[in-house]
Length: 240
Image 1: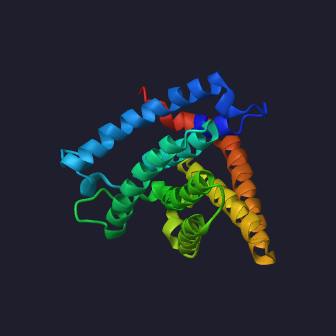
Image 2 (image 1 turned 90 degrees about the vertical axis):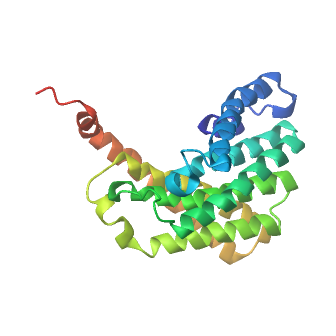
Image 3 (image 1 turned 135 degrees about the vertical axis):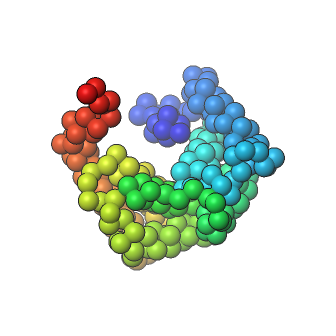
């Protein structure tokens, strides 16, 4: 997923759809995602040992986000039909997963206190979906706006409940990086929204979210640098 995002942010100003190397890289990055889809979604569909209601947690959305990123990249390659296929696959499973996570069915795995930052992945999925649909449709239309508003609502729902993350913020943890990626996608979606509606409120919102995304990423980089030794020490086995 990260490689696909980097592929779309190539600094070499090359037309991706006319470049054989870009197309080859797209398939190299996307094939593992498709194989993972067949494995994971097949298990959920056939109700095997890894029943969705038992294993569902916010990190399950990563496979859906990967499909959305691949769909957006497919548009840049000129493969609109493939983009629509990946988008439909992602959204169908997102609806099922979102409802399952909302219901918190008995027996489902909870999220430990230290891993509470992964709840921000709830923001990442609709934000990435709005960007992917905007690329497929050629503009940030009503469908993209609705997905953006959903991600904005989920963001406000999370930030208005600081006690949810209180214990996980006592000591630095690598899980804190789960704040950065969703915030970046939300900021990108807000920029697309502001460019479409062209009013002061939208531009202010885009500026605030973009600034917050940058500050969060910079803060995480600094904190990770100062705590890298502690993190490495924690992962070392106790030889005594």
